[in-house]
Structure formats: C-alpha cells, structure tokens
Amino acid sequence: MSDDAADVAEITEALGASHAAEASAPAPKATILVYSDDRSVRDQVRLTLGRRVASDLPEIEVVECATHHAVTKTLDAGGIDAVIMDGEATPAGGMGMCRQVKDEIANCPPVLLLVARVADAWLATWSRADAVVAYPIDPIRLPEAVAGILRTRLASEATVR
Image (cartoon, rainbow, N blue to C red; front, side, top):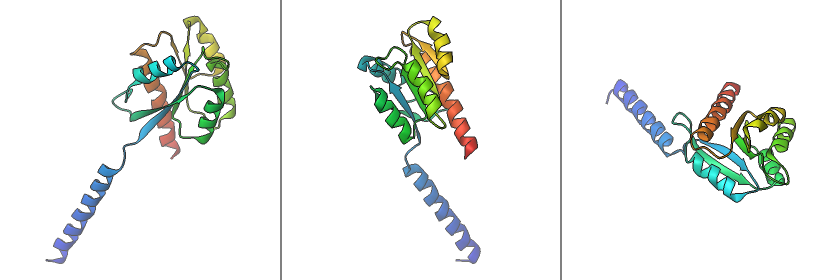
C-alpha cells in the first residue's frame, strides 16, 4: 500500500472511530426541577412536558422536589437547566422561593411559576420569575413556556463556554 493510501485508510479509520464514539455517547439532556408539595401537580407537570418540549431542544429529565430543603439542596448541587415552581405550594410558596433562589443561587437557572390566577402575574414579577403559566396546566402553553426558558438558558451557557 502506498503512503497516500495508508494515510487515507488511517484517516478513514479515525473518522469511523469518532462517529462510533459519538453514536455510543449518551445524548445530552436538559434537567428540569419541578417543585410542588402536591404530588398530583408534579405528576401533571411531568406528564405534560413529556420527553421533549420542542424538537430543537434535547430530551428532558425531570427532578421532582416536594420541600423547600430539597429544592435548595438540588439547586446547590448544580446541573439544573430550568425550574418550575408551584405558586400555590405550602408551606413555602413558589413565588417566595423563586425570589430566594434568584437572590442566593449564582447563575440561577430560569424559573417558571405556576399561578392560580392570571392576576397573580404581578407577584411573579416581584419574585423575578422568567415565565408564568396559569392553572389549569395547559398541555400547549406549559411546554412552549418551558421551551422558551430552556432556549435562553442553553444559549447563555453556549456563549459562556
């Protein structure tokens, strides 16, 4: 085999190995934290979001939290791309928690608040939420809103790298 043919064969093998490694590597996922003290709300959000909120975004993984402590611990650990908080959660409501995490978590992921009334949107502004969706959970509006905040988060992470 000539030197040129050997070089082409070596490059072809390297490209083949590279593509095989890419195919075997797990696809990236976007991790979404869902906070509510009500299991049925968490289940409904998870089912409404499905596996992917938009075709241009990676598959999602949902992490559920039922307490203030669990939310704080999970966000401190990192790796969360977006947060959905139930504004009606008790004893720690999503609006107050949203404001707290925005104040305390460096590079806090975007937060979407679920509110009982559209009129509560002004409170979401006070809490510094990135998006607001009113109850009842809408299977079109919720994934669209989550897709919007995920796109913003993933774009900002891409520019930082």
